[in-house]
Image (cartoon, rainbow, N blue to C red; front, side):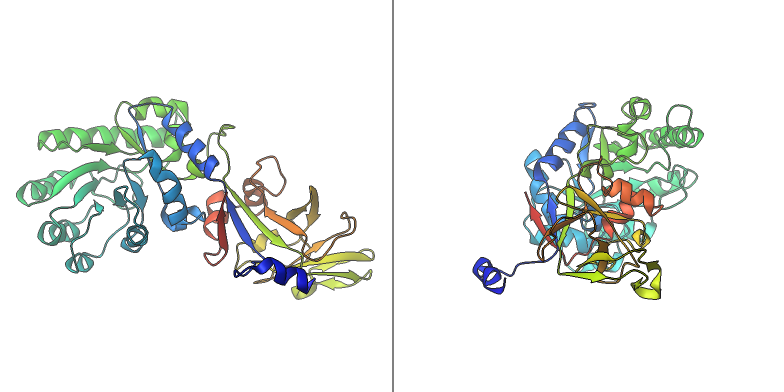
Length: 377
């Protein structure tokens, strides 16, 4: 076994855990989202390490489609893309500390909703694009409708390039969704205020994934916007309206590192939360909640070996998970184990794992360890 391992090494360490990313699925998802309405250009949201897929990986795959922007959360993420020589414009949608604008000239665009950041951009980064973020009712970041006239008055007095008007929807359930309709109403009023101040941004965007996946909300949004910021659907998932056309792009894989027989009546894992009801063959996996195997999958989740589902037994540890190998004929050290499948129909898909954990797919994806090797297929 050791000689086989060494013969395969060829100057590069073999990893026990890996994340496989389907480039074609990412491309297909982007093209699908772009097909709904030609007017609505799609800017991929690749913050939080590309929703676990790897921020640079996603950018390199999608830049060939020439999206308007890559949307990130922070200056740090923007620098990561710049260091990797990504050429697509970058929009930082999260808050930027104004002090960081003093360091050097930056090629990025910024979401802006505070006077301190607005004034700092005017003074230190007048060449950058500004996307004014309006709070249309979610009550997170953004300029309120009441404060918008005063904010735009300041904009008119100073040297900033208003590139966009943006907001964010809290809900996308459809035409009868009161929260959605309320935000759209405020958004329309914001557009009128912009016109009153003769500020005409190139990009108008309020919708994320849900707003364009749902045909009812998309119809309304397309009349008021020319860009969307797509995150979850880009990676193959839809949080509100199920869309069978989306293709999950990520698979998490590990390997069996030990196989042992455990007699009936033995405890498994921390606190002995699982007791064997019969003599059982168990497998040890070198992967745990640090790596992204959600601890809520303890005694509930499934993994897959060669098409066969195997139960997770005992508590998921930080770097180790134990599984029941009873359904596997002749298991061997080194056998490949799929933790999270990219097939929505599999019991161990990201969406099904999220349901077991009573979470949303975002939480499973963004908690995949950055240290796990990502392989582009």
